[in-house]
Image (cartoon, rainbow over all chains, first blue to last red; front, side, top):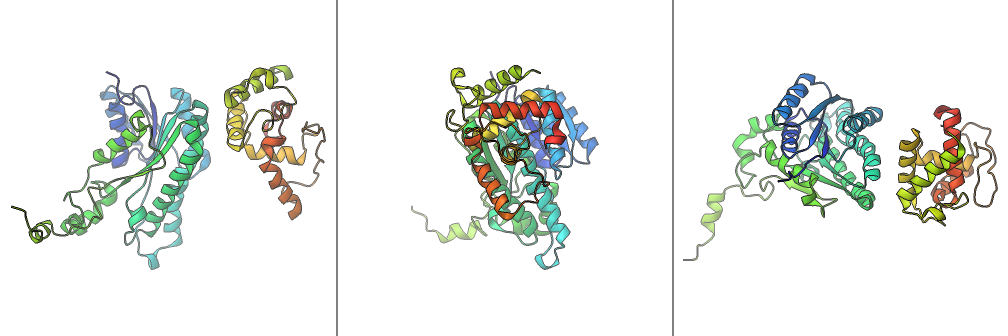
Length: 265
Length: 132
């Protein structure tokens, strides 16, 4: 049986984060070779490579500061030199610097925009040149539900992700001719370092916003990334696909709601 | 690398990018008028030229070189070589800059196969830094 991403080469940025790790492992399981990008967490990158190899996969670590275009170019060049091609780019590297609007320092605004939006652009531009010549490729930008819903303390992060979604749509239109697809995956609240503080401080009240009444796992978002990267999604481009357990559909107390709806007997 | 080798490489790139028939890729053929290239095609052609000849050319640079005539004997369709700009780039008047933008838009129309060969030949001869 052919695996979903058999013999594909995937570059995953920020691969040492929760979603990055889950995506790397899911893609390795699906048959892809993985370029594990990291910035500072070298040891975790090497551990991840070890896990990929134990799955029978293949991976290489590459360190790069993606806010610098020349480093993003080097990441893609290294991937191509090592594996001969790049079929998938997952723009996953991102940071938060949560702060209320009026307290937000310009550096907090810029740092988040430079990596989340600027880094995604730098990698996308670098890989697009390759994919155009290959006449194939799939790019997945990791966005967030905050890009369209807003969240207090995250004006920098939400703005960066809204920018990422706009980048997704524009790039999708330009690259469609070359059989290169570009999509966003917008996770809700996952079990990850990034959402740890919100989950800890708001806990159950946060769950009331989520009809499935639990936080997502990184693996549940990763499986959507794998799908969009694969030929199974060959007619999907320029989309923002949410993975959020129904977050935002506002069902604060299901029991009360269902009690209010008369049952037909 | 000889000029004819470069020409062969450029032809191969145009065949791949535009699906053009080899007999239509003559030295005087215009990328847009004769071979049907648009701005996205020019991007692809530049990427492929870079890979094939190990250059670091950008589409923007291509149009700038077309405009400021630094290569001297560049063949545009009507054979007129643009005036050589002596001032360093970016110091031109607003009108000159606007005209540069106009030309950039028309890159695909003005660039001929011969022009691409000139660019590559020059790049390989003097190195990227002097043409960039």
